[in-house]
Image 1: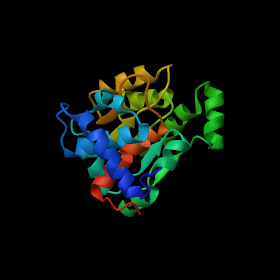
Image 2 (image 1 turned 135 degrees about the vertical axis):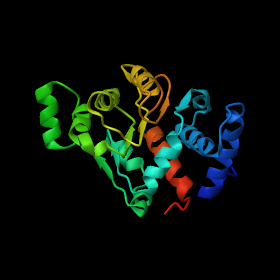
Image 3 (image 1 turned 90 degrees about the vertical axis):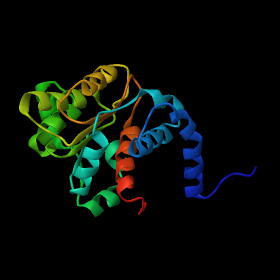
Length: 211
């Protein structure tokens, strides 16, 4: 069987397959790149009509990345999927506290999830950052509480938790928050690779060198 073997050729062909599914969505160049990366990571063109990008979200995230912002994630899978070398070239780092012993202890004491406790622990460090959530709806709910009640202001929240309990509700609340820019996916779909892909898409828009 003959098949494509070169990585960039595989990627190029994948984007060619995805592009027709974006017709009629009235996307600009930047949104098109983000949509294509999300769909490529999912292997699912049914994502096209359910991706939600808030006004100015991509520009806000790109500006923050160019300024050397850090990225805060809910789980290691999101942290692992983000191109850390690329982020470091802009001056930023990726942080995850899901395995931190103090966070685990706080979560147990308060009867909450570790990802939720991690977002509380990040606190003010989230100001001006990109928050990337790909697994835990509770983490997204907590970030929204911090935004609403404590005045925390991330540059952009990439909130794409997956699942059947709380995921759709948390993402709907994000899309309706009216305070911070956001990128999300409606409904139960999502996951760590999807959140990481959205972040990487914005970094590649700044510099498409994959090193």
